[in-house]
Figure 1 (cartoon, rainbow, N blue to C red):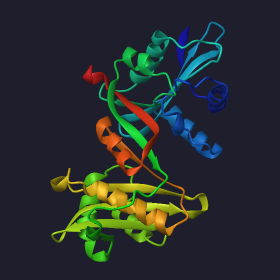
Figure 2 (cartoon, one colour):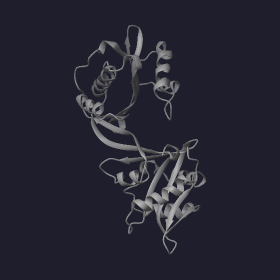
Figure 3 (spheres, rainbow, N blue to C red):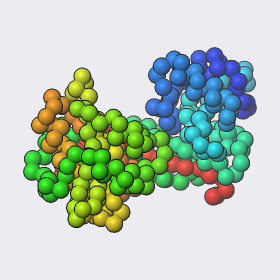
Figure 4 (cartoon, helix red, strand yellow):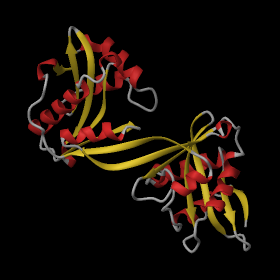
Length: 289
């Protein structure tokens, strides 16, 4: 077996299309549209490179790639494995080492796996990747009824802009809608609710409603750090559920939360939310080993 760096888009995509991906990290990051797949893979070829393990006949046995999202930060996609081959920890470790060693020791390599659906633990242990957090995708199909402190919750008005911007910018920093994008989107199907108390904006929730598919997504919600653990986020969530199910022909409301605290996530069951998907996140940084 030998490891090589691939530069042919056609060769890479042909192998991926017929490979086993049960242990592939960030599988959902490969976009479905052909043009986007091509752009993603060609970007990976340029930086950090696409690495493959070849057998004695120079046929690809396993393939690993990544895409860059910030300087020296990558999301690893793969490994994709030939269907007739069993993935071993040592083979994965060797292939990933080729990818990681092509970059500085300070480079971050991130992994994501769907809990209960993918095999990943032995391979993360083999490369000494550390657990970072879990992305929980939660879904609710019903209103919870009574909303505590409903009198403190109101729809956004321009007078709240500065306070909302400060809280949103502090809470969400990467790959998110800006304050202006949110406020400019507000209409019948894009709603922003704020929690006001003592003349202060202590929390907010932004929800997008999609009547055509009878669903809604709670895109962002947060409470001010000085007022955490006071139930503000739960009040906003309860209010959003009641508002949405009462005013639209919606069958489900969902949102994503990032947490290391499973007990906290379980509290959302009180609002009727159940875990739909659960993605475990890992990070590898050679300089930290």
